Every structure is written in structure tokens, then in C-alpha cells.
Image (cartoon, rainbow, N blue to C red; front, side):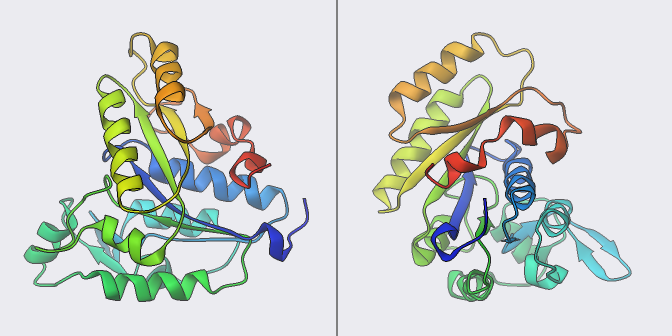
Length: 235
């Protein structure tokens, strides 16, 4: 597959909750697309939960995106707003004496989306309605960017409700749900296949990939064989 203007795709990646594997899915997509000869880039506009380093605060998810993309972006380009405490962005920002707003985040994202890449991903934080401040949520950022949405569903007890409510909210916000990824995060989940079948029947978007239980230390290299990049490009 050779890169061309027709193959340029941009997505906003959200999840049914925090800890459902959004970054793993993003990095897997980036690596699979890169292996297909496509130019890729990604941004995590706001990240909460970071370690202090000699170069400043660094978030593990943002570092993973930076490493997985083919475009060599600085850390500040990949993660323009990095907050130390692992809290909801609005709380982490309050404790840092900062304010996060949609217009500023959208500006960072639009700069990245202007790059001549075939696949650009904007990774959210937590789920669809995570607050950024007292008035705005991350959903407002996705709405301003007008990007199609990929929903990462963490397969565990309760995922049916979380997935259906998330999809309903995405569509109600006027955005396109491009598809969803089933990520097996609970190895002890009962009736996993039946739950996936229920979501395939009830969600108004295609199942793009199913990742097996790969463990807490899962790497994109382990997940790549379970991704058909063509499906994300509508092929």
C-alpha cells in the first residue's frame, strides 16, 4: 500500500473508560500503518499523570505515541499539555495552577493535522465526557475538530452499558462513529465472545479489530497481527 492523498485519514480515539487500551490501540495502528509504508503522526493533547525528568514532565502514553509514529515530532508537539497528577484533566490542572480549554487544545491538534501524513490520530484521555474545566469536556474538543471517532471498548463486565452509552453520546454530539475496537482487558471475563456479538449487533458502527488478552505489559508488536489496517481505511 503506497501513500497517497486519497489515503489520508484522521481519527479521534476515545475509550469506554480509562485504562481500556486507547494508547495500545493507537500505537498498534501507527505501527501497522508504518509497516504498510504510510506516514503517521499522533497527538495526545492533554495527559494527566506524568513523571518529572531532566527534560520536564513526561507521560508514558505520550512517549509511546511519539515512538510509534513515523513523523519525528518533539515531545511538546505530541503532548502539549502535560499534567503531573493522575487525575481527571480539570482536577490535575487545578492542582497545577493551570487552566485547560478546548480552543487551545484544538490549535495544537490542528497544527499536527496539517502535516502531510497518511494517518493522524488524536488520542483522548479517559472516556468521552471527561471534564477539561467547569464548562468543557474532551467531547467538545472532538466536536471542534470534527473528526470521525474510533471507540476502544475494554472487554470486561459492564462494557455493554459503557459502549452503548458512549456510542450514543458520540452520535448525539453530531460526530461519525467510524468503528470500534474490542480490547480484551480482563482475562477472566465470562462470555467474552457473546458480549462482542451483542455489541456487533447493537453498536451502529463496524467492529474494526479484536485484540486478545495480551496482559498489562502488552506491546504494539504483539497486537499488530490482530489489526487489518485496511479496515480502518474503509477497505
